[in-house]
Image (cartoon, rainbow, N blue to C red; front, top):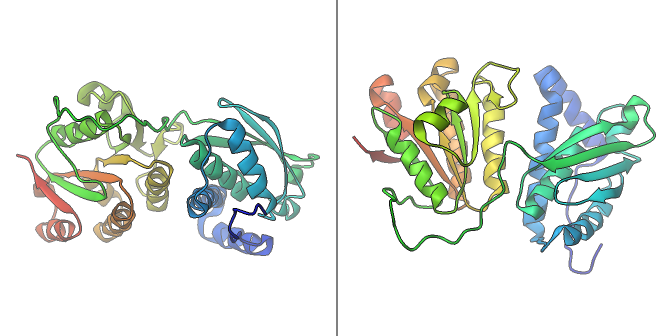
Length: 316
């Protein structure tokens, strides 16, 4: 371990195996994705906890190699690295030795690289020891879902901005329509924030109707054939998606549209818990969360509970 690097904890291989088995009982086929998401959050958290930074891809390579030596997950070799593609091989993988694919490893290395480069990288395992390969090979490429974090300075001139939002705050936008919420979102993105939208509306409609041309757009839908679709009943997935986005971007804004739809597909208390957890994440960062709602579409008691948790903006 380098002299400037503090000790850190990585889950032992036996604990990873136990976690996977428990997730398989709870989530079935989705357990691999859950392991990957957990790994991603752990990788991002590691970089932030150790205060690691890099100026370019070469410096990132040196940091990754030094950090990975201490993880005990596997022996790593970076075969190729540039800003558009990274190829990494792993031997003696604790996950593969258990007969599993390297899902936690895939998320972990993706989280480390994404946090160092301030740009989301997706990881793909193209071969694995558990399938009989000589070594595990992972390829990482810039995400097509998440954009590069923008580093523009905050504009001093207000220009056409209509809404000034406070970092570290979650907003409940009470309105009969969505125009105001999307205007708030556009204002923050124009001001240098990295944005993501989760909406009930199809992404192309969001772009066309609300003028959203920057940031990721995810679709709350059961359409499994679309990579950008997220099942509205998979609350843990939605939570992880937004939490990971907050962690990967120092100035993030998320617009969660379709609250009424989420409640109809789950139940109010489950969605309320989701918002409480997200609000906790927002409060600890400089992120912003925008949640439009039509109060008349919900039970008055439910609206009051939402208003107690979030900062209310009435725009009509």
